[in-house]
Image (cartoon, rainbow, N blue to C red; front, side, top):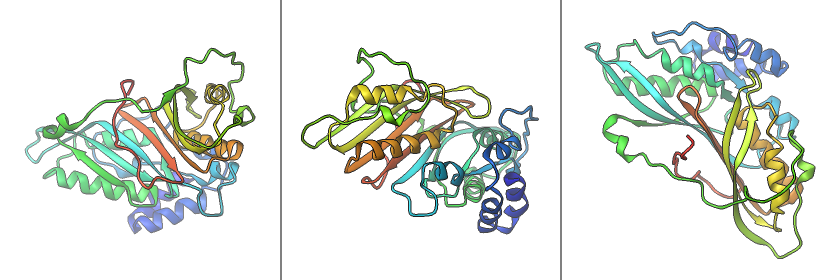
Length: 304
């Protein structure tokens, strides 16, 4: 059981936790998730408890995309924004903050989102001497769970005014008047048009998938930036909508989109970025690229 293996090993440090998780995460993914908190009735813990974090190996889903066993064809990061972060100071007074966590795409694990939320909630009644103590625990625990260093940008109330909202740039294809009847991922829908190589950014607010455990809908705006033969926009919109009944985690959906477009359309350069609406005070925004070295600014969209 990956969660148990991680909890048993984490006191020996991030490397031990990572090795223990990887050695046990080759089981069927459904069995892995059956041991996690998602979809289960749980007791909300209000005292610090890092054992609540539940890592899930990326390898299972990547194997289905022929991405396992070699170098990744992209760089990337999963940007998590936490809007409901609170703890007690040394005098017992509540403090609040927001945080952005950057989980590298080459980390061996993702962190199951409900376990992430439960872990953050475990600080609610925990006294800490200062915000630096909180930051240190967050960086240590999340890096151990992911199996790689997790970046953290910490926003105390005096920095709240720095946070902005905006929409992903690009040509939105959602107004195309087309017939759609496919609601499971269908890469065979993708095609290119005759013409010279183009460099453009396309976007859609119609990406929806479902949680693989609870079946709850996950809504997102997706941005596709590429250079190559022109991608047929109607085919791309049909493909994006084809995820509508698909059950997969956010990170896996974005890697599937990246891989399918690369195989079907053969662009020279490709970046796929999705911003998902929040649930439980967290949003997840995966970014994958074979050309850009860093994701764009972490700007919250209106729906988030």
